[in-house]
Image 1 (cartoon, rainbow, N blue to C red):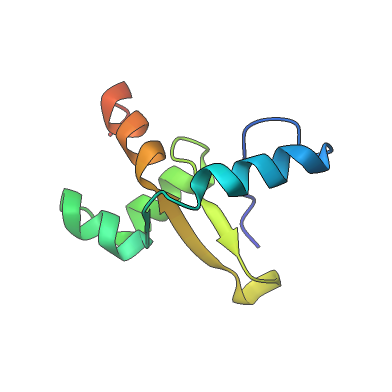
Image 2 (cartoon, rainbow, N blue to C red):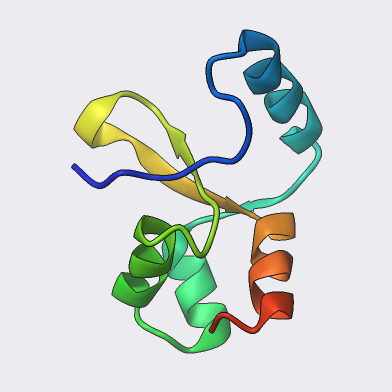
Length: 83
């Protein structure tokens, strides 16, 4: 299991609700879409997420969870020049 870091106070339930509401209108990308866009491997994208450099959202339970990367998180990652 890969730990994924999320910003903010996870113990506050309203934080999660606010985060979900803010992202409803935002486009979410799959790791393979990000990899294709920036001409890197999907494993590189997953490493950036695992290392906490790129924020991602886990959808679904446990090992079947799907990762999605918000456009805003990707823009912040590129602007920071982490890649």
